[in-house]
Image (cartoon, rainbow, N blue to C red; front, side, top):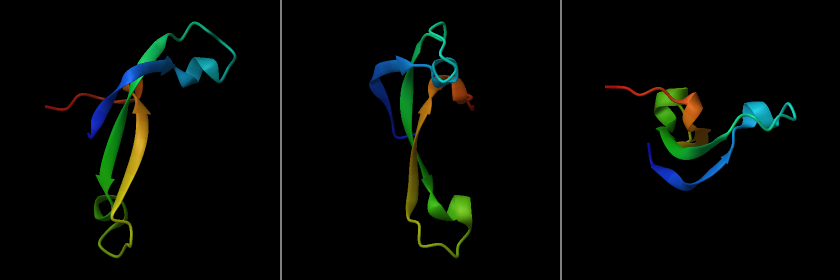
Length: 60
């Protein structure tokens, strides 16, 4: 994980259905190595995605 944003945003699963009961969550900028996602035969150095906290699982 790169870092957690300091702001919270409406949870998109609820907002996408026109609901306002989903609450707000922080998002995280997560960087994946291109070779991890696409194998060694890739030009992608890295892929960065913004993910809401509710979509992530804690790993030990």
